[in-house]
Image (cartoon, rainbow, N blue to C red; front, side):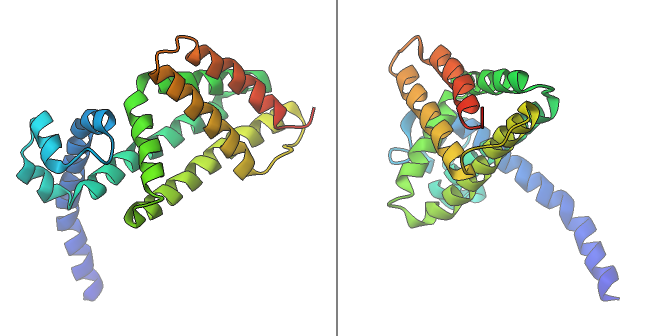
Length: 210
């Protein structure tokens, strides 16, 4: 009897849960531009409401505060980002092809999703001071580390060799390269994108045995 009741609740509640999450996603997407422009410290739910078509009351109904909204936005984007690179890993048939596709994807996302990446690095820095941000940042960092490692491990496999670094090191060097090129791109460096592309290809080759 309990099992029947539980199944009934699940059946009737799921559409409401799905609709609630869909609405949260819609609000998060609308807020991203403002968040990327102003950063964590200068953004409030009221500020976002003023720059979007949604009222402060609506935002506050779906998100407790700006921390919940910002972490939701970043998690939503980063988890989607992970699947993009997994598709590249599955698609590539040689080490050279994988290196090229990976480098192209890094450049594409730096140029197309600049505000989102700027927000991520801002959030990660703020997590050193804001304890409530730390669990999300640590979790996403681990997901991104695992994503980069899948690329490096597959590259090594396709080349018939093995990695010479740990997953933490591989993630750290790629993350450092990406962040540096992003900063230069934001500063108006017209060569930042091609530098990221060429250095990413070189870097992945340097992480495996020759």
